[in-house]
Image (cartoon, rainbow, N blue to C red; front, side, top):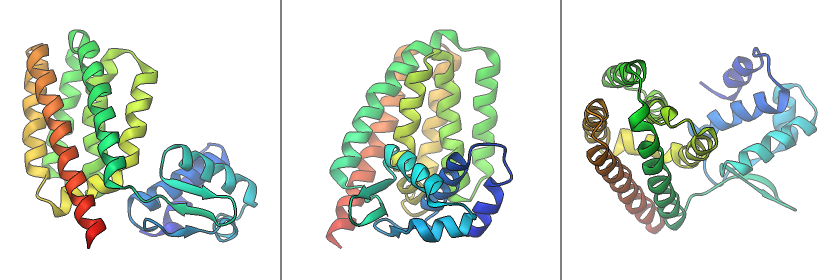
Length: 225
């Protein structure tokens, strides 16, 4: 799949043009079609989508707010590069926010929430594509946190996931992370099914912190190579 395919897919949807372009560019970044540090030329993107530069500029501003794009006054836009220090901070914030979401959610779980989470894990067992694995990872966590009934908190958590999604895909395919992550997901779900708040929070925090430590180590090594 390339940017042409992504553009064709999103332009079929009934949404605002900047949102559609942002969706396509976001997916292109997450899939590695656009590499970190790569320039994003507004005129070329506008031509590709058959639009003016105005909706492209708005789309890039959305992606800047998500941490995927950096806008420079004189150099235009480029795909953001995540440093090890930035990744550490993101994972620390994730840990705090997601633990809070779990605290709020666990006593309000419905059976349908738990069943949906189990179905997502079963789908994850069968998935092999890095993008699909990353999406299922988010869906699993989001399904659990939805019961907290804190939409702003969930939006903040989702944005943090988007910030590191492209690197999580590397973790899942190149760093022998997926098998352990999936095992930890099942342990977290089991604690949730038992409404064991203390265990669920402990497992979730360890899950996020361990993944964060591995990601930081990867980025440090990458920067030195």
